[in-house]
Amino acid sequence: MLLAIDVGNTNVVFALFEGKDIRARWRIATDGRRTGDEYATWLLQLLSIEGLERKHITGIIFGSVVPRADHNITVLATKYFGIEPLIAGQGDAAWNFEIDVEQPHTLGADRALNCIAAHEQVGGDMIVVDFGTATKFEAVDYNGAYKGGIIAPGINLSLDALVGKTAKLPRIAIEAPQGTNVIGRNTEDQMLIGVFWGYVAMMEGLIERMKAQIGRPVTVVATGGLAILFDQKTDIFDHIDADLTIRGLQILAERAGVS
Image (tube, rainbow, N blue to C red):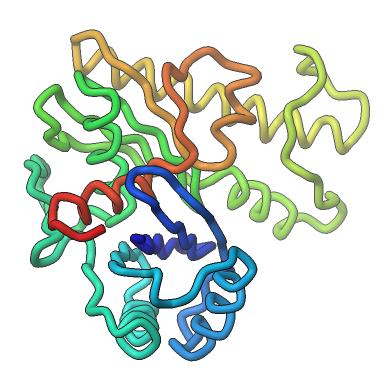
């Protein structure tokens, strides 16, 4: 089985693949100081709960936007599984698609993986939206080439800034407001309306502008945990896959002959 690891700014997601199917999925808070030994202690227990042993892992691939964590993930793979991991974007796991921007080397692994997975699953001209620590909008053409994108603060970052920079505003949970009312009658409702509907308006506006610039029919693909939440209140998404980044890792590993 393939162990795919997505090292993000907020969480590290581990997914275990049997072929193209995800057998198990776990996540742990990202901490660049966490050692390979600590990852192993946590992961081996979870494998045991699934009735699996380390020998069942035959391949490992990881993609990372946290360079400090890369060494420790590599230690986890080599020391505890005896496997030299594939690193997304390098060597046998090179991207192998056109990155048509001014600084191709600055494209984050998560963004590249989303483009690969979306192109393979959906195809055509696409806008890929990823709700993570930051919200990223990617323009991918019908050949799978990355043409550029947008980076905006994630909704939780926006809420953190609002609460952290004010003395009396409370911490609220991000959820879909009831109904379509946009005039709040109390502080919490007013905050939720501002954050949620403000974010929906931002997404709809940016996607509409991107579509106009692309000038051809476009499929909008969304990923990240909040995609399903926003989909309740807007019709801008054509396809949702919460596991898009992880699936991009599986595709790269398969292309490299690792499973």
